[in-house]
Every structure is written in C-alpha cells, then in structure tokens.
Length: 374
Image 1 (tube, rainbow, N blue to C red):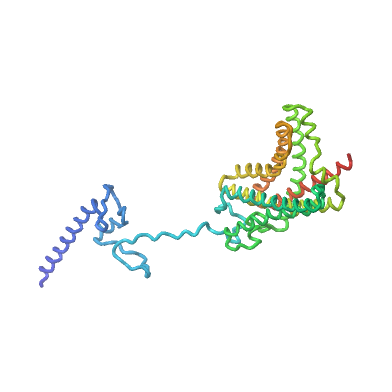
Image 2 (cartoon, rainbow, N blue to C red):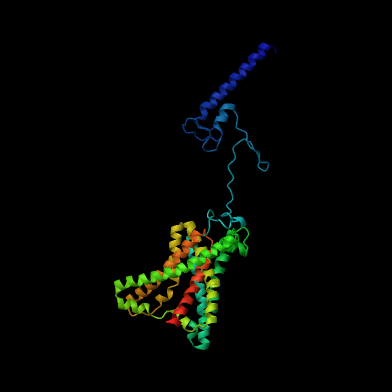
C-alpha cells in the first residue's frame, strides 16, 4: 500500500466516524442510546434523566464514560449501575466527648419527653400508695403520714425519678456507662474546673434565696388579686388553712429537721431536676424549641405537685378554684425560674439542683422558725 492509498483510507475512516458521531448527536436528543429513555428537549442536557449516562462525553468521544473507581466486588458492565441504597442505622449515637453539648443531636421526641416523666411519677405514687396501705393495715393510724421521719424514709422513693430516665437514655450513647447516662441528662461536672464548680454552686445558692423571695412575693400578690375577685373573707380563710408543711413542722425536732433538709438537697432536688429539666425539658427543646420546652415543663411540674387539691372534698367549685390558684401560681413561678436557670446554664443541672434542693430546705427551716416563734 502506497502513501496515497493509506491517506485515502484514513480519510474514509474519519468520514465514517464523523458520520456516526453526527448520527449519535442527532438521535441522542430524542432517545438515550443506552437505556432508550426519551430525552426532553433541553439545551445543554448533560446526563440522561433515567440511567445517568453522560451524554456530553458520549457525543464527544463516541463511547461511554469509563468509571474512575472500579469496585472489585461488583461485576463490571458497560451500562450504568444503579446506586446501592445506604443502610439506615438510626440516629447517630453520642460519644463521651459530645455529651456536654448535644444540641445538634436528635434525642427523644415530644410524647416521650412528657410520657416518661409522668410514667415515673405515677409509678412512684403507686409504690408509695402500696407502702401507705401496708402501714395503715398493720397500724390503723394515719398520723404517720405527717411524721418527719416517715417523710424522710418515703422520700427515697423519688430515686425512681433518676432510675427511669437513666435506663431510657441507654440507646443514645456509644458508651452507656452510668456516668455518661447522667451526663446526657445534665448531671455532670465534665468541662468544669474547680472555679467553674464553685461558680455553679454559688449561682444555685443565690437563686435559692431569690426563689424564697419570689414565692413569697407571688403568693402575696396572688392573695390580693383573688381577694379583689372572690372577696376578702373566703380567700383569707383558705390561705390561713393549716398546710401539710405546717403539720410536718409541728411534730419535727432538730434532728428530723436537719435530716429532712439534707434529703431535700440530695434526693428531692436531684431526682426531680434530672427527671423534669434533664429529661423532659431537654427532649422538648429539641422537638418544640426552647420557649415551649420551658413553659410546658414548668406547667407540668407545677400541676403534678397539686394533684392532691383535686382530690379534696369541697363544698363549692369556687373554693376548689381559689385553693388551686393560691398554690399553682407560686409553684409555677418557682418552676419557671428553675427552667430558665437550666436553659441559661446550657443544660447543666448543677446550679438547678442546688437551687431546688436549698430552696426546699430553706422553706422548711423558715416554716419551722415561724411556727415556734409566732
């Protein structure tokens, strides 16, 4: 073959390739040459909408675009392979280092945030009722209900408020130790040095005193408002009724007062804050936002402390309404303050637990002092 014949052969191959490329260019705008899917009339359409073939590459090089990464475990083919769906393994679990800041993690939802604390609360009351029934059955005496030492003993039932959420948060942690479970609920010193811990303690003590003043002021204003609406005599008679705290104080001695104060700080304040702020408010803040989580937690916390009022035998609905408002409004005020402290302290419970426990202890001590002084 001479040079002229070779030149003519190359020209013929170029013309053939050019013709084939032109045919592909023309046909590819109507149907995909790989899967046969109809191509919409869109300018500069790069990929087939069905199989993902790179139409620009096919037009330019007259062949399919090769894969950049070859998977040795998948049999190779010239046709595009469908994407393998990813395996859903549930929410990302929280590591030890991420426990102190879980604001970007998906936690328990609204119904769980409310249902678990209410379930724990009614479980505690069910066990307490069983204990009371046994004592009444053997002693036939109801005076023990207001005995300070019995109150101290029965307060240990509130440890259920810690056990229930601690067991529940197991599935959210990579390493579900007791320390990490309590840390996820906000009861942790992780991330604090000595100065930081002292600061949280002082904040808690300071707000405990503020809480006493807040409740006293709110109670006073509530009485005045209700007197204006319902009359002075009926409100004053209800507000001067002997309370459960006064019944407990009337039979207390110095030792029982000290033990009761310690229980208020170490058990009552700790368990209730882990359940309601550490679990309920934390979960609600993820699903409903901070504003609603604060309001709903404060409302539910107040209501469950006043269930006894609705069991009270009353001669009129007015008496029931006044009795409820006299207790609910101060309770809601202190509960709202605790929820706001929890939010302010970045979901850490140290200051909140101290505020709650010391507030309860101060309330008992002040009531004891007034009872025996006046």
